[in-house]
Image 1 (cartoon, rainbow, N blue to C red):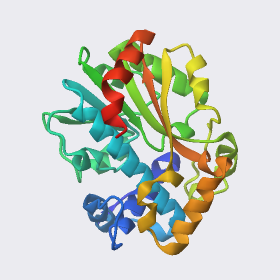
Image 2: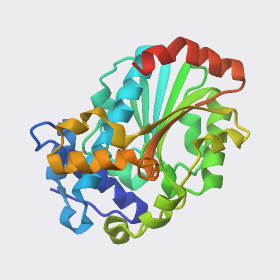
Image 3: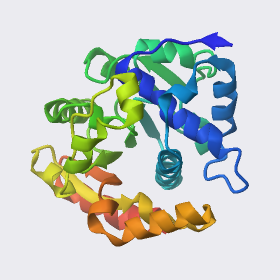
Length: 289
């Protein structure tokens, strides 16, 4: 057993990890992420202290599944590509994706990467970067002049401040040019209330950012274009949940405020509008089918 010590927002990575491990115990798992189970079994931590609700565990798995699906689709229609997973935690997305051609970069705090190194090994295609996303030096390790880039920020942006997100997206654009961005976001009201969640109270992490209208990012002056807004409550696999959770998710999907409380947003960050429309014309029919 590996004794781990994490503080504040770093400790929140254990919430989705446990959700994925518990998902594996079900008859019809959403993710079937056996690596999560292996990690949970090999670290010394009182997971019960996080007080995670079953609905939260399910949502975490749905979020991961939807992101996986989009990344797989993106990589299936692009070549000479790079995937950058910001705030990767102990997630095993690279291994779930199973694409041997992508150059993959997982980034997180040094303390987190030190733990990851017990369970994941770097290769010629898979890399780990130890840094806070708000620092600037790490970005020099991302290769330039690749044809396609996808940036994943799962469970991350809500812990940042808006100016930090803007600066990060700007630095990425300066470094790699055009890219596709996928992340989950809270509504403003959810962000305000999320700090009352028992798990966040326990870790001491603080939610700083939420957004109601996803098109607001298009006014940031970075060439950002919204591609899609996807709701966790509309996930097709909900029919395989227990009857109680199935009813709860379906009721939530009826109400706009509940659907938008926490959802997935996908953008294209590009230098010119022509790049955005070229991307839509060539890829979206495959991506969203």
